[in-house]
Image 1 (tube, rainbow, N blue to C red):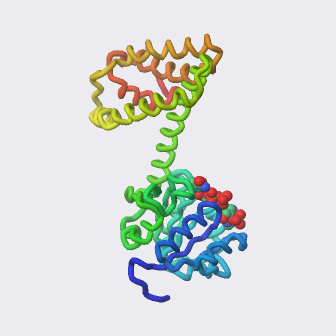
Image 2 (cartoon, rainbow, N blue to C red):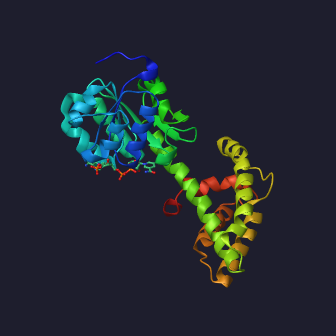
Image 3 (cartoon, rainbow, N blue to C red):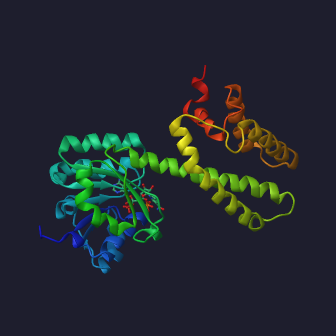
Length: 299
Ligand SMILES: NC(=O)c1ccc[n+]([C@@H]2O[C@H](COP(=O)([O-])OP(=O)(O)OC[C@H]3O[C@@H](n4cnc5c(N)ncnc54)[C@H](OP(=O)(O)O)[C@@H]3O)[C@@H](O)[C@H]2O)c1
């Protein structure tokens, strides 16, 4: 194996789907000698044209470089690909950027530990087009000793390269936590758009106020996070009782306009439970208790 300075360290990418191609392309643009392999060989052609080396087999690919990045459909595919490689991965740092759950990440970490492979689990919070740019956010978790020597190489994938800690499950957990937030924002926008549509207002007419509201709420997060971490929820702006009254308007408006009331009714049901628990006079951050304790395990 050749020696390379840290700025041009070699890397292998296994899996050249939409995301794997973007990862390999970003490494090449970052000046890293890049070995690639894909089950369907033809998908490597554009990368070979950009200077990538196509390995003959997955085993050849993983033995080519100390750092191996895998990005395939799911963890079943990860294991179908890696399990037959025997000891070819020994002594490598394996970075798995395939999406999955924290349990799958921890199970894969245990599998690698039994084989003496240093393992980082990761999550890509961006679309392929953003990979390699200032906008790309990629999360990593696992031993710091595996991340640090390869940080500058991994930074070629995006400015938002973020190390979260030793627990291999963290990157998957942050991933789903952020996706849940994204869907809540989008569903709130769609609910509002459906309501306003009943009065002839189109989505573009709502978008500016929706964006402003989203930014205002984003500004509350740090203060609410502090209250949750402190376990004290003073109503500095509005009580949960006040929120509940406005939620009732949202439910009634939706029902009377013939728009789906499912999402507003769910939000109101959570809030009714908070009031029943005696939190009506608390600030909205007290709603965390409804998320920490699922309905089915409540006494
Ligand atoms: N695309 C995105 O916007 C995005 C964003 C964030 C995260 N991700 C994650 O990135 C991962 C890859 O996504 P993608 O968009 O690249 O998917 P994709 O375009 O469908 O590519 C899937 C890749 O997995 C390979 N593969 C599937 N089963 C395999 C097996 N049993 N053995 C070997 N290789 C196998 C495919 O090989 P073949 O070419 O031979 O079929 C292909 O290279 C997923 O976990 C996804 O959730 C994607």
